[in-house]
Amino acid sequence: MKLPIYLILITTLLSSCEKFFEFEQEVDFGQKNTEEKYVIQSVIQTGYPAYAFVTKSEPYFSAVSPNNLENMFITDAKITITDSEGQSVELVNINEIPSFGTLDSIAQIFPGFYIEWPISNLISIDESEINFNNGPYNTIARNGKEFQLSAVINQDTLFGRTIIPHEHLIDSLWFEIDEFAPRENLGNFWFHYSDPDTMGNTIMIEHKRLAHTKEVFWGDNPPEGTEPNTYYVKQVQDPLFAKALWGSVRNDFEGLNGTSFDTYFQRGTISPLINSSFDEVIFEQEENGYFKSGQSIKGHKINVYPDTVLVRLSQIDYNSYLFWRSVDFQASSNGNPFAEPINIQSNIENGYGVFYGQAAVYYKLIAKEDTTYFERYFPGITEIL
Image 1: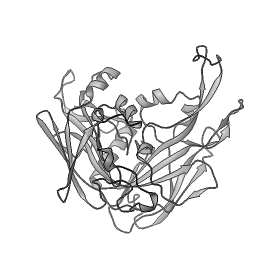
Image 2: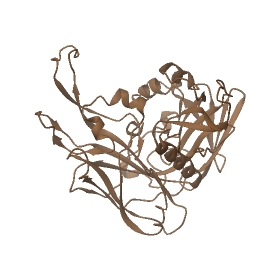
Image 3: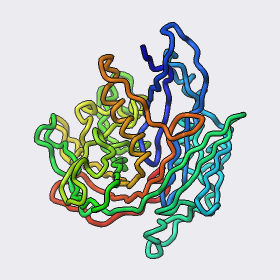
Image 4: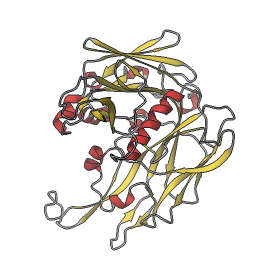
């Protein structure tokens, strides 16, 4: 019989959420050790620095703990991205970069993180000078070009290829309360989309809450200076992007090629490991899958502000779509022993993982009704890292 033997940590930052993937291979039930391989998740998007995560695979039956998670990361890889014209850039490990705000927190969680650097090439330009085809920063990425990744790790070399398609704008976006949600201030974002009349277009939907109100109950042992058994409200930001819940990648919207229509997406979760540190809010469990509009919490004189959400809608190539679709299928099976085994569609040679390009368009939205958004948004690096 087939059993999954590798539990792979592949984290996304600019473009995705942290997930654990299982790769299948014929193995003996009693097998404890397996051949160690490397896992890469790398993203290149127009106008922003390319990045990559590098980890080691772990045996399926290994216990997942903070210690072995830290040991999984590779910090001495040599990663190069080259475009179809021969121009190349080497990614730099985060530990070699001087202190730079948001990157400090990333280093604590993901020491195997690499990014296109130096910062002198990534200085934001005046908004009036933004090149809509190249984006706000001077990077190697360009729409419509092919790219190759090579990663030298110890004696192994891993390869990947991808294409950044051409970007496609959304007509409009808005927020609607979901009448079936467990609370009356929860809902989803909708958008009107005109699908191109050519086949093979795939959109990826991701989001990151830039501002999210959390209510914390301190209990009997509150921090110094705080009354016990009291509530505290704070505004926080999601540490990473998350993929939309159920259907984060859609290829020609499953039969709607060349048509215009309204559709919506639900809020996905980043990761159980990340959420355990960031989601201490009361009622957070009820909020799963929803964005929150502004409303006072019943029983408390506390104002809850609406979520401010950065939405990323990207065109990706077909091989990248196959990868993320297989990840979606794997997540939806949720460990069901009766589900059909899923083989993750890796496009990395001599290893596991994915290298994919994004023609990304950003929108900054507030979760309140009766407001429609039309204008794209160009976030700064600190908003997407």
